[in-house]
Length: 372
Image 1 (spheres, helix red, strand yellow):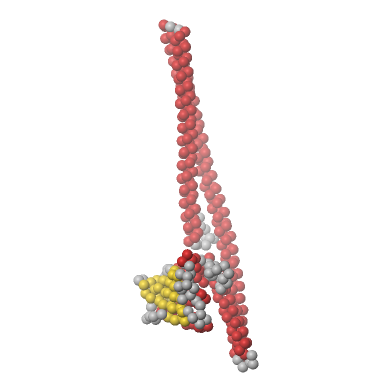
Image 2: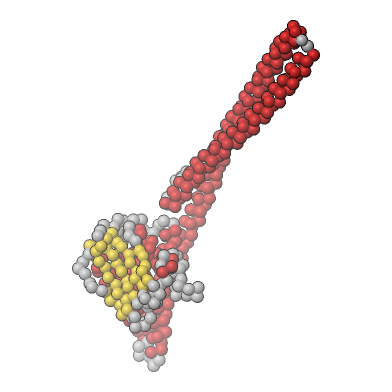
């Protein structure tokens, strides 16, 4: 059913396979239902014929009794012989009539079956064409949306970067100003808000790429241990500003693997930033990486508020938030992280309980394959 105008995706393959299975199931059920109806109809006709034959036999026997009462001797034998001949003729006529009726019924059933056999593919072809048309329209809409989103995000990022650069320039010029302390606080706030907006735009672009199957991964040889150190260094300032201890636990020797450096750094940064968000002042976050079989296992362990066991799977869904009134982000970070990890052939999970902190684990195959 796919055409060159449709985008390849596992979801569509599954949909097509499911549609084929449902059609085959419908065909089997329809055939079984039709045969059952025909068997029931045949049984009703046969039962009616048996009753009619029984009535006819009884009537003949009664007629014979009356005839025997009125005749005797040779006359009786002749009458019986005549009646037998007449009845034979009647029986043959009835048999021929029934055979013709049966033939007519079979012919009608065969004609109806042939008609359904011809019409069903036509209806399904029409359904398939409608489906392809809707898919083509959907693909066009998605492509237009992605192009528009790409252009808008590019322009927005340029503007945000301009705001951040201008804020940094002002901060340098305001160091000797009489009210420099307050002004520096304001410029820092501008930079912080600009960075957050830039990150949110990036998350939305990533989600659009995931939905369209275009989240590109470019795996190259790299060092998993240095990746952990880089992520911790990048978020050290944010953790310190909140009074949280952030460090690499049990640093290891270089661990060679193949992965998309920027994407895996994004995953670690998302997990660490999430821990910082939900860990109170005075808490701690430990990040480590170790070899487990044919994979590297990464862990971000915090002393935060924890997650109810029933929600450990839900945290990786898009737009998930701790509570209805939580506004600390769009709830896309963990969803995007899961998609990136799975695109590398790994898996991600959470281990937590309320008040006991949270441990986020994800694995990275030592020989991760490039994905696009």
